[in-house]
Amino acid sequence: MSQGFKERRAAFRVAIRPGSGLQAAFVVGGKIYEARASNLSANGIFFRPVEQRAAPRLSVADRVDVEVKYEGLDLRLRGVVCYRRDGGYGIHFPRQDSDGYLNPREQLGRIADALQRRSVSLPGGSP
Figure 1 (tube, rainbow, N blue to C red):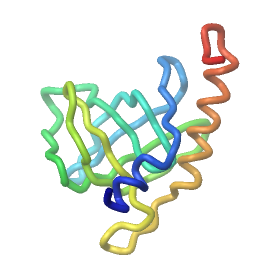
Figure 2: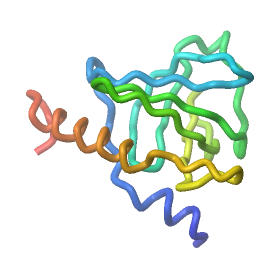
Figure 3: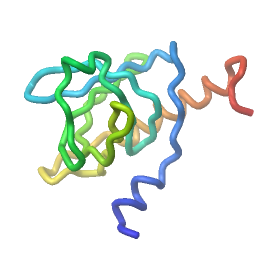
Figure 4: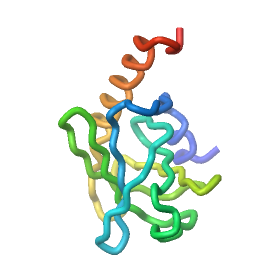
């Protein structure tokens, strides 16, 4: 098993519920496309473009910038498309990309933790 795969699966993923307050978008060619995230971890996200027809089609191994906003925290992360499924994309955020950019994964992990706590405290949340 590769180190990259181990790193991708090392972080706990949390489901994003409608109304969570999390906003996501991805950037291609300098243009921002709104996305709907369905799960998030400290080192990745799965999202679907809100406007499927207007959004560019990403391929596995494409590099993509992702913006995540939650409760006043705005993050910009650089990731790699790991897989495509049902019109959406699984994006992995390495600690550091090939250009030397350090992803704010600790902050992203705090967002995932906050979303998990909120999910558990809502009616119908996980035990």
